[in-house]
Image (tube, helix red, strand yellow):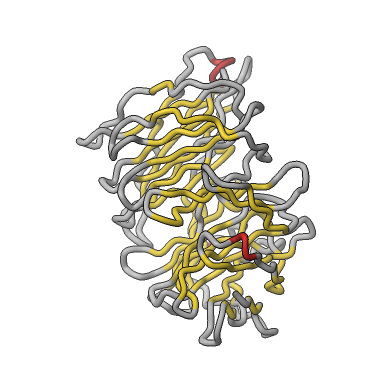
Length: 371
């Protein structure tokens, strides 16, 4: 599938919003998970974090080129922040919080907030606690990941101090169940979690003796342990994408080659090349009438790279093309209200850069806009 980067163009700044929206807040890092999201009202939103909390930019109108933001939602002492979105459009924010103490280890817990509508405030941050009561063990809690099933239930997965996998989720009434120990050992941060359209949740977590995998036998049941997959995964790089009904394709960085690979459980590991500095972003899109997978990453020199292939046809080869932008962290990928591919990058100067697919054949991107 041909990929053409954005044509050279002078970037445009969107008109500043009110003083509260602009605020002079600069992002420190991209968040984990998919951070460019389409809301139920057809507007895109992008998220990042800084030392003061969460930042959000919001598209002014569906399919438009002007944005408002960043708006700051204060949340101190967050070490990691992950985003998951349900089919209802609700956006869930999961964070690991470490509050320094005068003596002894930091007080570590997980916190959660929700955005119910595009451009609207978040709920208050609420603590999900920590599966460990001992503060030294609690400090060794890993990085949270989450997924939302077809009923809107959030599942939170995290590596515990013993390097096994823990689950906490909401019940049918929306109340939080207690922590469930899914067992396992010798795992590393961080799990990749997929919520299939059917409602099934699947989890893959890297480990020293292969990757651990859990699959729900039926929607809303507890995930059950499957056989380990004998692969090596650079910690923190695994992402999951549903590429067929109830089937995940996993993408991660191979620690031996430094390149990206694709894998479907039961199949071969497929090398995809590239030189990623962090996790890749993955998205399904219809290109020229074909079901395709779009991948993006920032390479070790900071260049934002883009590629596309037929879905589940990575073995036919793909070619990484530079977009002409430089970024930090993982790029954002989404489809806009018109089904066009949109790529976002957090530039080294802290600005947000947005480019979207134009009307040319293949995956041709228009000029980027500075937000």
